[in-house]
Length: 151
Image (cartoon, rainbow, N blue to C red; front, side, top):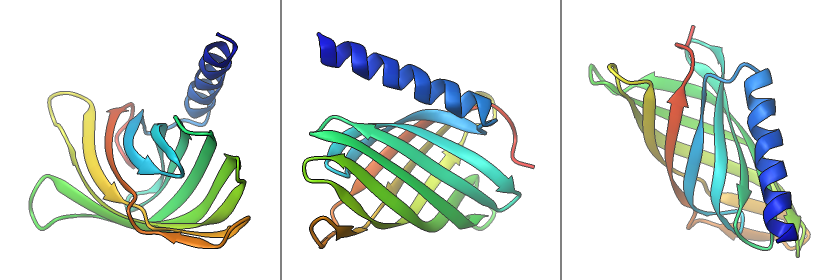
């Protein structure tokens, strides 16, 4: 029961911080990453074709935090799909502690009639501290609510 209350408090604080930071999109991410299987997922626009894609993940033996800069965020041809590539720090607070860098390659679709964005991505992770390791099997499905249009 104590863990459920703690998880609820963390989810509330993460959601409030995403809102205060003027997130463009906020939702959830399912998949295998950072030793966890579900995350609060947010996107913060830095301009028309640049953004930060951040996650706070739960579900394993700790909490994972990723903040990935997507300097490449562009439409796929003339379709409604966008692709993105990025990189950034990856942190796992648990047993064992982990600090490293993650890459990201993904594709997403933003609906016109409803403010929902659905995407899929691959996040290879190179953990440097506590144990050096490379994780290439980290895929995810993102479902986010879009608050604002990207500038």
